[in-house]
Length: 590
Ligand code: PEP
Ligand code: MG
Image (cartoon, rainbow, N blue to C red; front, side, top):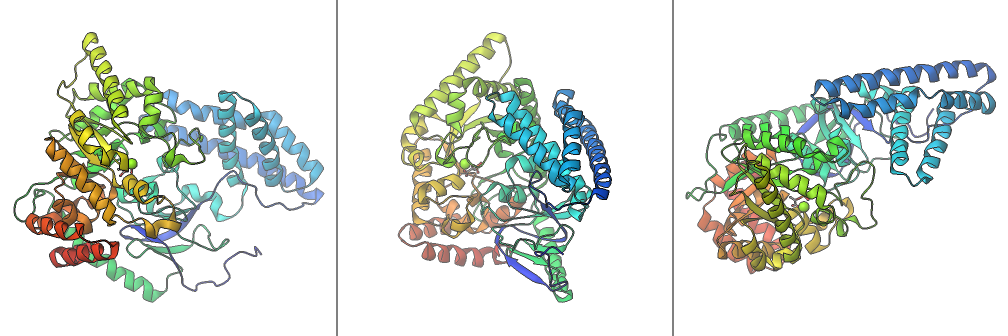
């Protein structure tokens, strides 16, 4: 028996993590392990060799069928044949007879289980390809690992082998990279549970966008995790419960009905305006990572899209989408949210948003080659995106926003490239909105401090609190070990937002907030009191924030801010925020 296997049978076990997305999910766990990893190794008898050879052939043919099915699915979803070609490359790997012969030869010689032999042979191929300084061959190494991972999964006899066909499930992973989430089958996802991450990590943002519960920062003993186990994932309290008892199930049923009742009440606000009780209007828009999420943003009654994280379009394709593909993607979003419009944030790759092939890997990625720095270095890629944004503006209202601006030079260089694109399109006779507004994110302390100088060069600011907080307090936004130090209520953060809003208003432009702080109803009074004009929040938070706004008095919010600015500790600030939230909309803020 596996020494790490669960031995406490049906005894309920609870593990605590960080609650990052509300809701409760109950269902079987699916453990997303790293697929191409060393399998268990054991010796086999001579008489078993033939059976292992048959296992290998069987696993290879199952893998081929799975890849064919994936390819068909992709084509059905409207991908063109060039996108589906990657699967042809994967099929070729499986047809390479020399690899299969080598595995069989070594199996007969070494008499180890075929999984282990297969892994060793492939590992050697992959390692030697990686030594060669040729990007094509390096990509082949990734293809081979991917396919080999599938074969290993099909060779493995336990339940995890067939997780692909799993019905609705709670997904557990050490971490979910942006590229992992691109490939997930959302229809069967009940919730996310991960070991790494914090409130503003990509997994958390994704869980909130999908409106499913999320818990990160979980520490589960090795060997405890088995696909297929029944779990409850509590995204309110940050708990993952294995083998829930009958009492626990009843308790969670009750919680689910309470939440359904609250959700029904919130739904009634869909068509209502985002106004404070005394009539101050705040633009309430939605954040999206994928074009299809716009439907959810509209269903929840938001006024357009305040942050379209376009990097996910690049991750979906694994390469740079061309101008026509981008124009189509952005144009569809713009047309569907008319007349409100979409704020397209130009590519923000790097740091926590990286390509699957690790091309942006760096020792200190949050302080490295990221966001506008990449765009200003790869101007062809940047201009393709800018041209696509401009062209999309002929289909609906589009605004462009630059990420990670640290000072005026980057802003001016970006605007100069945008002007070049405008000029090109004019001379090509291509239509675009001549009045298209351009803004920048304020997510670095240097930009907040320089807001007065940046304001005359843009039409709006949008404060990215996710990064602003991490760079101001020096707390990694995705590191669960320092998650308790990640504090939106830090007095320095309030002061920086105040500086930004004041600078914007002094120069006659508007200022919004699109970081996760905007989606937390606890901070709605502070942001209203600071004079923020727009809040752009994850789709699942839209109605909760609208509810909060409609129960606030803007004068009282301003008085609160006047009070908070005089305070020096996070605890005092948070206590005041909680008191006001409880008094005004206690039933919804918990
Ligand atoms: C932010 O930093 O607050 C933001 C909205 O951008 P992202 O989370 O995509 O880095
Ligand atoms: Mg950011």
